Image (tube, rainbow, N blue to C red; front, top):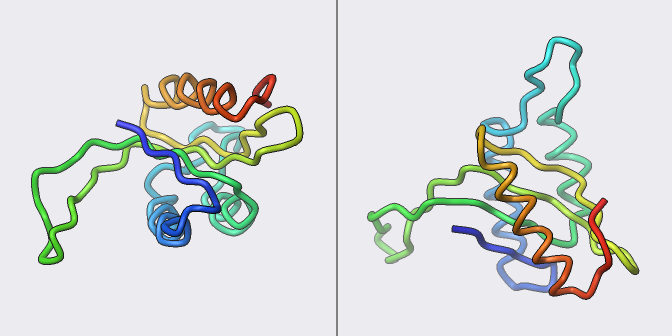
Length: 118
């Protein structure tokens, strides 16, 4: 499942904190040459400038006392809406989820009447 949260959504700041707590799980430079997303960049640079966050997750059949469902995240995208395109700043995910996130981001771009993704 996917959830797209825009900066204008009242739950955006809650989602920012949630993503900030999970960057260490997903944003790791795995290659020997150091390429890849570094956890600190995702938390300190990309997240504050994001216009939206797309989260991939699986629902979990447990609830808190407040009756809120748990989710098990498998990745996320931090993006910015530009005048005629969507700029993807960060994609962090478990193996196999990145392709699905990109596919959904194409739909986000179309929905927002943007010509392409960068």
